Length: 142
Image 1: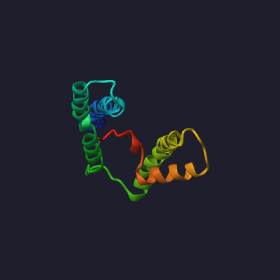
Image 2: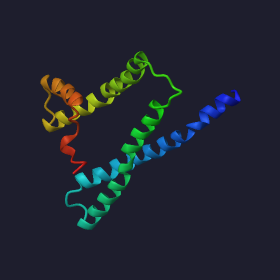
Image 3: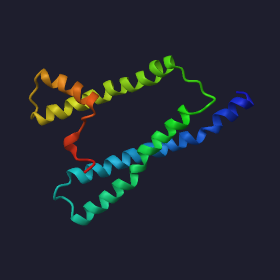
Image 4: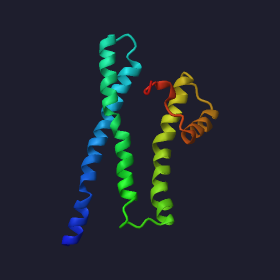
């Protein structure tokens, strides 16, 4: 590795540290969001407020990931062609939606139907993924 490559790589090395912290924030956010949304009467009102506060403390992860993406995409030294945009970045997003979005969307529909399957649920799951209607009944953001 040349000195120039080392310096170039370390110029944005802080982004990797930020990504790690943001990933932990995602996990902690979801832990407290699930506690708040599904606790019912199993925790006291004060414990619920405490969990809501802790959940909200970890909300910084979303803007952090957006800012990291901005730093990467708005770098003047990095050339991103339309071909690269579609075949590298957009295809990765689509693949993530297929691998993770569809199974979770289907699971939600299947659970809401009390474990009864019909073929229409598959089409509804696909529509829900592309319309962004995932885990609506979970109440994470309420």
